[in-house]
Length: 265
Image (cartoon, rainbow, N blue to C red; front, side, top):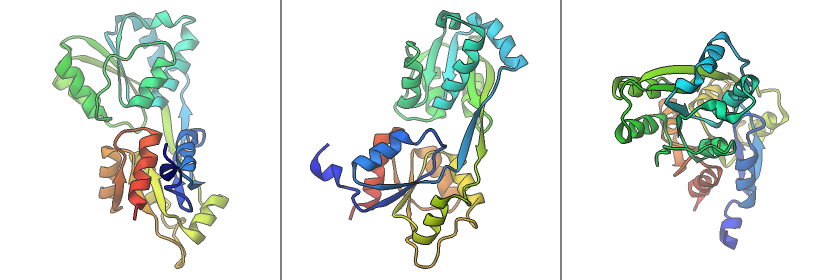
């Protein structure tokens, strides 16, 4: 990183809205560019314990041809349950793996597993379309790992276009986190920020639902809004939030670069 890049956000206050425990990569990327980071964790993640559905799925795990992950939360939630049933990673069988985004792929690779499909565009739709275009899926069994707020786009495409047999396993829940009482929220209300970063449509929804409690004082700086990707950007536009910049890929580094782009000049 050049000297100018290191100081590109010097003196800038950036609000990040990721869940607690998932802010470090983005915070580090922003601080390396000189930013002051304010955390408003609008969401919380709860990993689910094994259910009757997951137990049935694990009993026939070796019959799946594909395993699909759309988020790092899905990876962590799945393997939390998986290793409660299996002592050996080989219990996953010979299935191929598809992932949305490099962060999700890295989480899978941490288990010494190879990712077979990782589309250039980091969306569930792009992943499903890539699987349909590059592989014969008709009558194959696919397990899609989800959370409670995941869209059904992946399942719909794989079923209708790919003619696959798709099972869905929810392994985590995303809940709105009340941040109005936090010291960071009071600081935001009084001083505002230069930019606010959204990494999911759920974060946009949570921000809107707490908009009254997070209303800025008249003298506060109005932040520019930055999106991690196209799906989040679309949610922001639907909510009436202008998108100042969109990350080129779903990574902390790219998101920090998008913030710098939004505030350039």
